[in-house]
Length: 67
Image 1: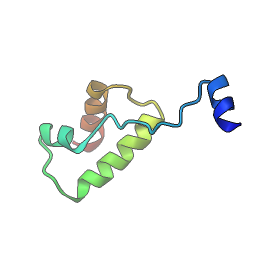
Image 2: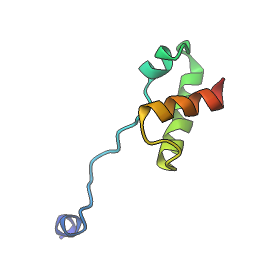
Image 3: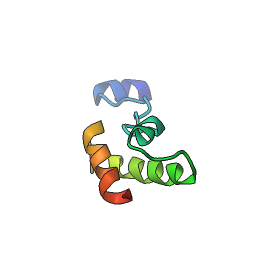
Image 4: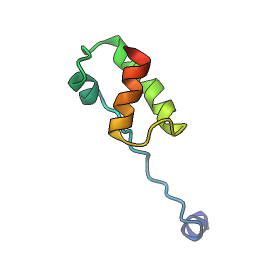
């Protein structure tokens, strides 16, 4: 029944893909450490709030909020 409803409303049960990842922070010059968790957690919330929608805008968001 639920799967029928999800098909009718085109609802997906797949997990959201995080745009920003640890490797991107390293590419940006951040050193691995405790701050990674904070940045990624806040970035995931920002992504959910549509503050960025792609990798380039995610990197800009990090630069603005963590530099």
